[in-house]
Length: 125
Image 1 (cartoon, rainbow, N blue to C red):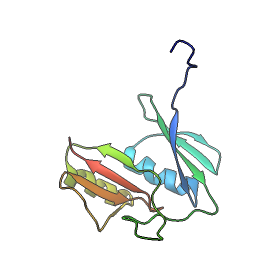
Image 2 (image 1 turned 30 degrees about the horizontal axis):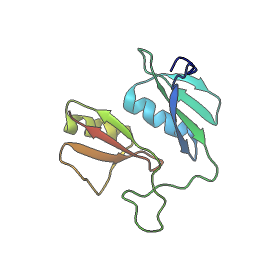
Image 3 (image 1 turned 90 degrees about the vertical axis):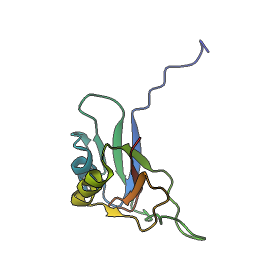
Image 4 (image 1 turned 120 degrees about the vertical axis):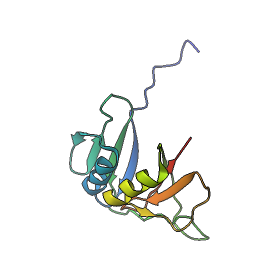
């Protein structure tokens, strides 16, 4: 497709009741520096470059339920984070402020909830 315009994915955006608070959690978790902070919009970028992770304050934010049942607010997206050691990475995630989800669907994956309730997965290849 020679007529295709250049498209670059710059970030995944997570809504939250408070963008700065959720960004601070992911900064502790990932160790990424803040690139932009506009109060209600914060972006973290990996130190070596690449796609970032942004956070947007949403006043009408509804915390997702994992796993969702009938009538529950479902997650719209989740992050997969590859790790070398599930136990060590899980302890780090909990120290950063994550909560281990009560439902765990796989042995080589751990589902955690960030402070705003977004599920994210730590997994080993």
